[in-house]
Length: 436
Image (tube, rainbow, N blue to C red):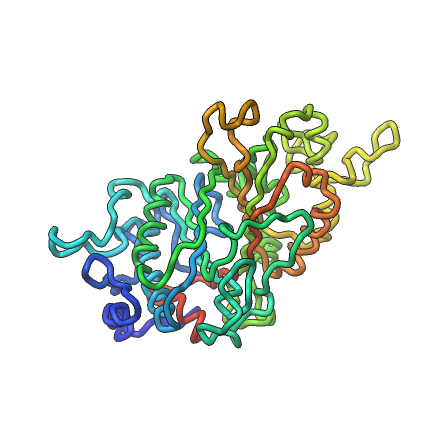
């Protein structure tokens, strides 16, 4: 657990914010004296609330919500600005996740409101706010990032596992959607609630951070509780197949071992944290739609309707890549997405939490007979792991070289972020990053 912020530091954040680059909202400092994120004494039992405080951040093994907004940001201020930003975000995020406005209401209607207000009277919708930091924050140049110099004197604290992902064959990275010092993953069952949280956190950081890119994803229907340990374990991507079938059960010790940084992993301050692999992959749906169902299942390596391995009926059935059909050929195509990923993972699973991406439907003349979702439709691949060099990089290298699905995909963003450990009430992300 992190040491709590001192009362003096909490009460002094308002003045520090004003001095450190404009971290003042609505003409008055955001109040920071509220440690909890709940709205009443019985709110812990509310089904629309996900606890914010704890040894791990929420939004990682939390059952997937219906919507995700992921934002990459650059820190434009100094080391002091970054400290104050993280202090203020720690309080603001707890308030939002607890169903409160981002700060106390302005004392006068003549002042700019502290909170933008569009989530008033709405359920908290299982809102989670998850913070990650990129290699550039530690002076390590990331993909399209602003790194290269140790701007915040954090170079000695960089976790060894936090290095920019290598280039993968076939990637076509877009400078507009890569890089970033910080990453916020905000998920909720109500899109307006998620967008409200992002909007207000960015407002809290006014003058200290600038938005670099954002992704808006959609996933399981509200109420599905994907990944909760009962019922379906996955939802469908825009290819029509299930996402996350191979995820470990949420209550298993194997999942904890695969996701959370452990003592001895190379950076003691990261214990209880994780690593987020983010890849934005665009799908060629027009070409995909030209395939018949058998060919689509051959490319993926699973049945579309059930999600089961080829020749099986249940999604959770074991994947037997050595099984042969009556003709002596493998039942599962060896170059299928599932076969390559399964073999390359070699007992080193990670936890997927991916979402679909789709632009607005264009006018008929704009796509001229192609799929109406357009060329920008895709998948926001989000995966959490303890060691990306072991759990992700070898798998992606094999997929890039051999996966049949590669003919229908194009990856435009590929990033790695260190997800900070969870917070005890009254503590701050700045303590973990700078002082722990």
